[in-house]
Length: 339
View (tube, one colour):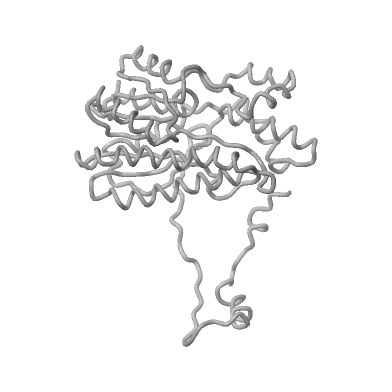
């Protein structure tokens, strides 16, 4: 095995299957001792929209899922066993990381087993596709309590330990949805919150030798299938989640695109000593692992000022087109999602 992370101890939340599983294995392959995690023993269903949605799937849709199992289904224990089978060290922890007290137990178990914590990967998350005018309070909290709350919980418990040893790597899973997306304002808000949390934590902890970055994966997982099949149903009702071309592209590529294992090397890199000067940054990883992207820093692109006194509304109406809004392109023109 490579030794880029030899002697390091990592916790990976939501690592029973999918993206989290591949990250846990990648860290172990680089020499890290890993604590795997998911909520409870037993693999979760690929039909994450619930039993009613599962029953609504057609035979053809079920066959597509069976034909290509995009991720090994399992739990924290099976992934830990995989790591041990390949010669690594790993221990599973079952518990919901959206629960602050449970996370305290997770971090304490890590220290009890391996003596410390060096790397924290906040991969746990979920989503629910619902339009904002139909979203229930429960659907909002189901997603936002997972992210960024669970990331705060783990960071809060792990940071003091990392600060004492003057070394740490915190990696938070976000999504391109942090820029805004259709029919999932809970998911967009949760992931935008992860970005804000990442940037704030990076500033606070950098003096202690701790970095904090975010990764936005584009991976074919159970959620990819669920979203595409849900959209097929909603299209028939005249309420699609996204434009027809986007749906066609997803249907065409989801059976052939590589699985989530291709994004793991980038996440592992950010956990190494070589990434000591990288912090507060969001990275995008393509579904085939061939393209890595770095999001730009938010900047003020245009300003207008008044020499004296406060602006009036009439003055803003007159001045903004050639001042503050010069060159501005409306969101609907930048991203014509209805086409």
